[in-house]
Image (tube, rainbow, N blue to C red):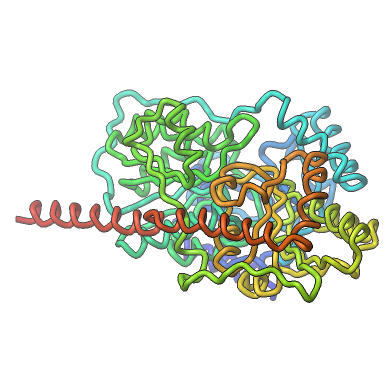
Length: 551
């Protein structure tokens, strides 16, 4: 389905009536925008229209992941048409007596939206960074497992990279005034699939059902494949990193707050929000800020580090594991401001979990489920499959479900190791069907929080083997935990997986311990129940306040 220039201009004029639009799209541009959610281009333009009254936006397509914000790359605007990536121009103006701002916007190709394409680093912030990125990409394609060995050594022994947080900017003398107490700003990393994102959508759903009016921001340049979930809950969705440079973040957040005046902010792994809340609090001291964190990254602390660093401004920290709860306390956060509530009720069937029983009359089916990304390390699963298939022929079968930026690298690795007939590849599909078809879920991630797939797998009667990362030790049997580093991983895997086939008593102990750990987790109040009650109480208080003010 294509979307021609006249149709898009008319739609944009309806959404933003203060602006006059002209649109010119190439045939490829029409194809790309036709594949995107209807609200995609509106959401990418919305932050720009808060900042500018007269703009010319050049649409520059990206066919690789990770995507990069053109504003942060070293490419002079006057040379934007040299590589043929530009597929359209949108001009918008509410005034003609102000200078024209020329801006580049990153949009995904139709192929990238439909199915993730090739992996390529795009660190063009300097000539050296671009050279390193090019070399890194070539090595990843040629020898992904070898590069992963280096990456894990660097992650373990290298210096941590601190999150990019902008200095707070304050405006003395500007009072915030009244806030919209029933408006909530939900700040997310991106609109893509993942465990953290699954909880973010659930939290948004709970807030919407409780009666809050929502706005969304996403601060990572990406295809935004799940943007429809946000646009189904709110008219006001902001894709920030498709075109807005970081130097404009303070001005943008000031405009967002002035336009919507949200009384509450909930942060889900958003560096934009973490870096801007000092400014928000200086302008609107009464705003209530809460966050949810999932993952403790082994280099630099990542989002957890940013969250703890913002502890003076965050009123409530929600964490999903006891390990994270401990990190916050060690980081100086008041224990009363940290709430541990696991994600146990919205990702799986609430019926009685099925018993874990491995087969004795057929090959053991090992499964990989997740995005084909560097964090999930699908190349490690493929290497494991190659070893087991060669060393124990006919005793194991393999299923991989998911797609992502490492699609081509994984496919090359499978062909190189002659595993085309041994590994069944599946695109994204019903998780329940996947678990019905496997016996053991293998989590090869280099980093996690507490994986939702583990909870789902256990409920489906699937044994879980996982790298010992994040809070996986909370839910995985000790004998089923494997080291994160690739070499140590294989040393342990060579002993573990043959025992899953030959040692029934060992399997029974693993299954019993796994179920015990998950039952303990399920016995706790869930994040869903906590926030349902939390928001219900807030709404009762707000309704009572409105009633008093009306008298």
